[in-house]
Image 1 (cartoon, rainbow, N blue to C red):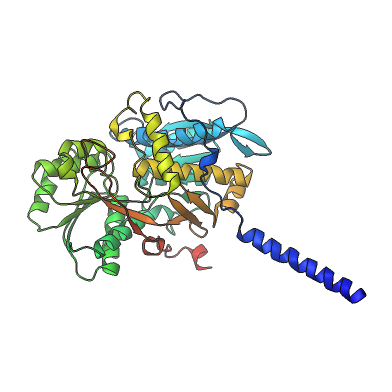
Image 2 (image 1 turned 90 degrees about the vertical axis):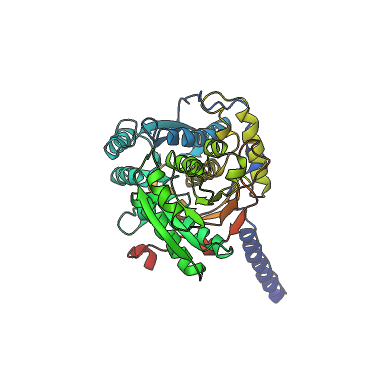
Length: 446
């Protein structure tokens, strides 16, 4: 009898252990949950209500004036969308109680010195809990350095240069949720390794990001495509108005594809001017997929465009389909500048950054605190189900790991009547577009 009692006790203990393992194995992965989405019918990107009382303050830094002003306009809507949704749910659980999200803006005006002052003001005067931004990796580096100094989490949501998280610039407070130069370059190279084009002309902006994104593509071609040729390579100043001197060299180089990472307004201007010069080459790009440029050249001409990114409106998940519809339904109610067809659908940048902000606030809520150390502990190695698929935060260098997408634009398409836009995405598995480990960063050697 005694023996049988021991046997039963051991069996019961064994069942508890097995049950615990099964419970762990089937535990839900954190992620975007459609069933929890608020009614967004009252979302107005031009009239966001400032929450009162207990708040989590996020300082969003970008171009809101100056030559790059369109970038701030494009990116702030994603943050406001996510904040509006979460605030309507009652906020996020922090320090044992629900807190609303308050967004404060900092304007870089396209200048590093101004970016530094804007970030310092947000930290020292506005006492924000988190910093986020910035279009232009040279400016993001300035803001990230301020975040490190004042021990604020730095959310790199749209700055993609590899060097931002290399051995020299990495710090524990910075986390990136967007695609990087290496990820984009490797994804594009992997895509073209499956295609017949062999001759490429690289035309990028002349600062660390432009050179990084060019080098990533060349490195990717070397790894994935046996027979290729770089027939030309040039770098131009930011906010260039006249691309003709560069594009005329492309015409005589025998290129089959123009490769660029140019962001607004340069990417759009390049597309328009290339078309005006009669250059019908595919432009393989990260940011030159804006509606205005594609409308200006006409639907047929835009069919040659090839975009690569970490989010596309054509990715076939239930969450993405529902998100596209929800966004488009609200777009019909918006005023200037958000009633522009550019915002009709949550295209690559818009969707990617929405994913990043949802992930950020999910991490803060799971950390239960705005304490940077608790956020760091929660986010390192974290896995999250985004609108378009699984993502992971690599622990050693705080770099996102995920599948990437490449799409050749189509016309006609279901998105726009007067411009080419996204076709079926070519999926580049994460292992073929993963960010290389930063050389010399001791954390990544452990």
